[in-house]
Image 1 (spheres, rainbow, N blue to C red):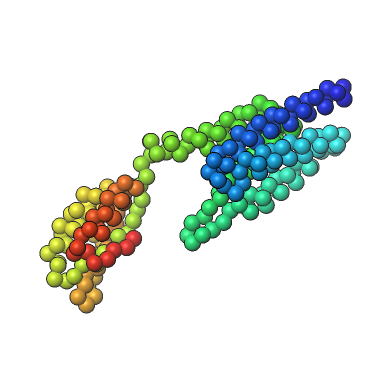
Image 2 (image 1 turned 180 degrees about the vertical axis):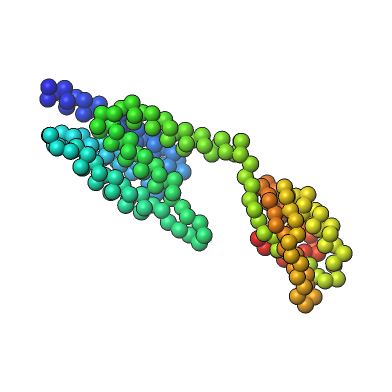
Length: 214
């Protein structure tokens, strides 16, 4: 009976190794801080702790050690998240660390089918979701555009606004201010990524527009 369980544990280790390698490959290819080695070790470690907690629990609660894995992984995941300016990086890596630990625990407790199901689900999200959203979801943003033109170029305001409307999905003027010899026009835009690039090209090349900002 002991040999049977030892052989089963080896199978679990191999399955966990493969799962960790598969999950870590995408992070490694993108040169992330937590790559192939880190994700694989997390998956293997979670499997080992789960096996030990199950074997050592006896008639007690086998999830006690597993609960500490969840807490530890939370700290580890938080360590790869960082903020730079207004942008936050590392959230996907933290999520992969979290799911790698969960899959490793499932394997350790012998729930191979559950682990396999969630591994496939995670891979779909990692590899397919971005392509799916690019293909089927139009990225639209609400932008407040403010640009400046000389007062003497007031006659060009309508043609400029008309062109901006052509380059946007929805656009309308919400404010007009005069400061000295300059007019400041504020517009509310509903625009996608491609239109943003085209709009910026137009605003930069238009010699009447002295400056603009979002």
